[in-house]
Image 1 (spheres, rainbow, N blue to C red):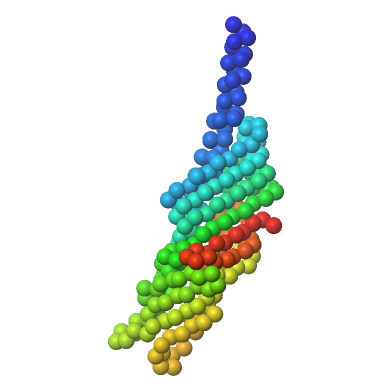
Image 2 (image 1 turned 90 degrees about the horizontal axis):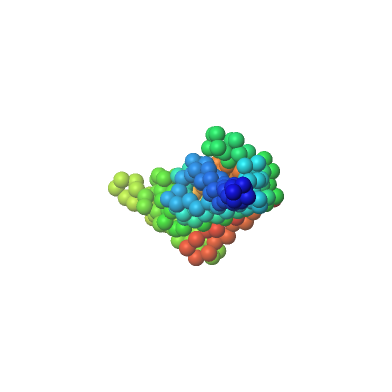
Length: 224
């Protein structure tokens, strides 16, 4: 009888350590991430070996996938956060619903922006231009819209790109044309527009690479 009880207790401990603990840690991470990066859908998984090491703040692997997330009003169509070999403050995570990474070997973030979401954001940031449309090409981003001056509308054409350094990501115009401007200088409209401040994330990363494919901007950041 005693042997059966001991085996039962061992099984209960293993189940709690290897199944319940990773599930709970993933839930807390999901909740904390959603505070700073609200999304239509988050999927977060955390694991360590053995599982009870998570209670000590040792996270072997964290993977967080988000769809339709937002940071400061800019919609991120898709994002992926990968964390390897991290020490996370569990008391802060559970008590204050906040991710505090004390030490990490590798931390990578990938974010994708599409044409519609970028156009919606530019419409908010550049109020002078009405109903802007965005076309993302392999080598540039085209923005088209109108400036409404009441009696007349002036067509605006902007060619630019997404640039980033440190923790700042911006849209920068390389060419701006306003038809029939009549000598009015509109050069400052799209000169440089802040898009993302990576300090808003609950972990420290810097811009590594930004590139465009037809229809999408892909941003990579990491802790290196």
